Length: 306
Picture (tube, rainbow, N blue to C red):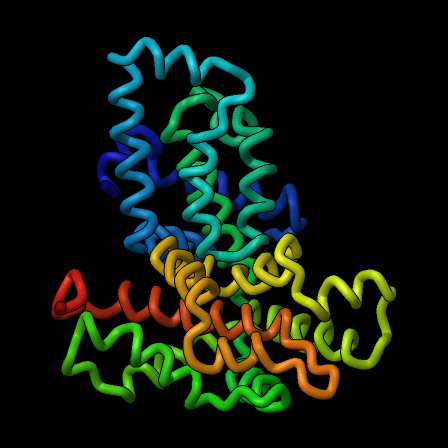
């Protein structure tokens, strides 16, 4: 895949686009060339990147022989190629998504001789944006695991309850799964700064509802976890989105099934408790760990044993 990309978009041109994007958006200059190269190759090495770019490459080939698809692409409102490409950016947080929008709008500035409307061109936008986002966040070296474990414990969520959920979800795929691997993957998700920001916000919102610090109508909506309120899911999905679509699928399953401590949090309204945000945060952490485990370890079985 890498060779096919570089035939159409030389590696040097992509790296130059990353450097120009960093200057244009963040005013960051003097980034070592080696850092950009290493980061770019890291983005390209991801399974999700491979799957997305492979799909976009095939679609670019297909559109040449499909008049209906070509006609749809010419419509100014056509966005499916962006939707597919953004799956790469999702791995690197909302910052990468924002950068994607910038480079997509100014595509000719970065690649003057290339056609901005193609499928692969959107994938290149995602690769450049994701690489730049990693370079920007490279200075964030703090491990947030202890902070996150402490925040979760403050809401009655022990680390072991997350490990238990992950173990239960993954063991059907690998009956000999080492439980310590579940611990390591949960902690890996908890190390992330973006995970911390999501947990922190969720804790503050639930506590604010409990203490009556928010608008009465809003507090009623959140406190009762009304069916059409979806901001809690929006905050929580920031975590699994960093680990690909497999993680997001697991999030939906956990949110629906309310397994283990998720169900306990969802049903506990004693003494004015509010866990509207926190139950989804647990879904997000465990789902992210599922995605991480799937991407970093070859499962013994591709489907659960009956």
